[in-house]
Length: 143
Length: 293
Image (cartoon, rainbow over the protein chains, first blue to last red):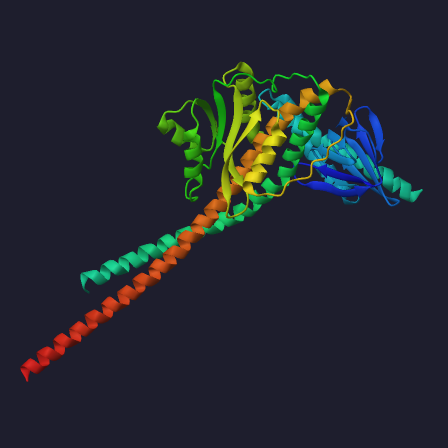
């Protein structure tokens, strides 16, 4: 029986479906999940989720979050997730630029809400992950 | 013109202009409603899954204590009342405040002007009020969540519950009291609510094997309750916004339809009265003419 996988972010369900194998980036390193995996709760680090279904590989960039695996159901909650095919490098650059400017501007002031800075840093982190995931696959194609 | 006629005409005019206003409000509400409903539905999964993960983790972690999980004797219930800022949204505000008034021995924190006013008028204990705009960003809600966590930790309140209008669909919004702190047994609670509202039961996976935690149970469980709580408060605000705009849209549509109906009835009355006046005049003329001849 294949795994069922859901990746949920505050905006949407980024992924919902079955998978033969799922690779997850955790704080302790990348782990591969196959059917019959022991129940697990882990902290997800920003990185790449690789979903294999019938020989087809889907890659998603995810931000930090949590994963729970119970009886072949893999549930990932994360701040942000995006399918590799939908990653738009131009948009990432713009987002990064905006966030960087905002973080720089905020650092100077004392009044600024630390949570706002954390949010901007999250955008930067997720942008870096997206670039990494995208870069890896496009290199694979040119080789 | 006879006096009756002018009165009717003025009433028609005022009913029609009221109808125009309610129609404009209906249109504004329906455009906001779409956005608010989407936002509430989109993040509902996230908040629920976070709650489920916390619940599974707690049930598998064995002995574990966290300040936000600690149960104690309930002397003061802490209620976060989330209401709209404005009225004109049907029975929504009334229903929420009625539920709020039924709760005895509670300290309130409010989001939304209507709730604040109602509680202040009734002389209930109001700890704080946090304004949140229509956009309901996470950053706007966070101060309220942090205030509540602090109040819970300081022992000012022994529970934290949210009272808000749960968004079921455009026509149905139900006031809901949901306990968030101490944060345990949450899934059971969610399940009861689903049953009450007649929503489908999600399949809960069970697995008897022991659970592993990476990096460690304490690491995960230290983070989760706080994150869950903030997310749940945000979700409640989003639900409440969706309910507010839906309810207002429906109420204003009813008002618009009603004004059309009244205007039609008044027009009929006006025409009848006008016709009666004309007939009367003709009768008087012919009577006068026949008297002269």
